[in-house]
Image (cartoon, rainbow, N blue to C red; front, side, top):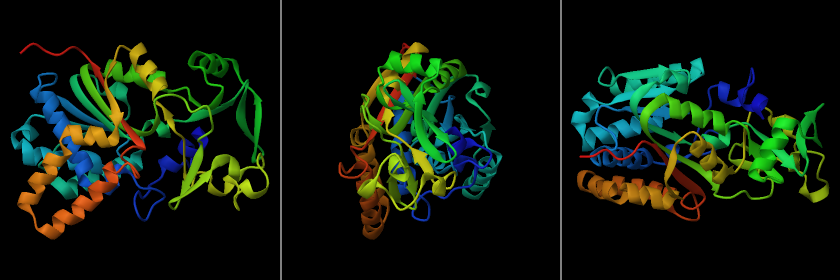
Length: 338
């Protein structure tokens, strides 16, 4: 999976289109009110005293930079004076994505907003930070576990062979007998914990709290979903797709359901705690999505409001993203005394 996504010609190392013309939609590409709601959460976190108006606002996995840009637009509307004190950062390891983000921010804000880029969390190193990410954990490379074996690809064939010792130990630690197992969550959590003395991390992803005890590995190509094993010779007959997985190698997204219980344990080991976990629908409403829509209705035409309201429905409708995606909020540090 790592080679598919992050190898020399890996899927995420190239410029990709997200949305109608790409392989999949995200909440960011659906509506600007996704970023707006997170901006309102940031404002509430600062007003509560947990962070200050001089904190760093850091996006991880920014693609073109739409999410952070949407947040900035809403901060300008709600707390314009904070644009002079907040410091904006994108963690971006790939040069082509960094150039794309810089071009977009220059087009959107000119010189009004200063954007800093770093290659990794280790370069952040600040006192206070608000981290945000959308669909990042499902993009971490994983191993696929089945009893005491794990998935290997040999000569374009999928085969299960005995697990190596590190993977076997991790599978036993988290009780994974069948399904996906990420070996990188702990290192990521440790890096974030060391990046700031005090922090809040808000992230959205699809998955569930506990492990599914089944395979969820799948390919997204042009908005069509292909179960990974249906692209292999491990299944036969009507369950097989008309393609093989090597048809999509590095040219389509490869992903899986996130087990949040594993993510929670990884962060707790590094000294962060789970401040909140809930569905995307509940999180966005709690953050202030409805209030933002009401404010928008007062400042725009009825037609524009109805268009945006329909987009927002996709974010919160249980049949679409509302219940399929979850939000997790992590914190490091106790609430400051006022």
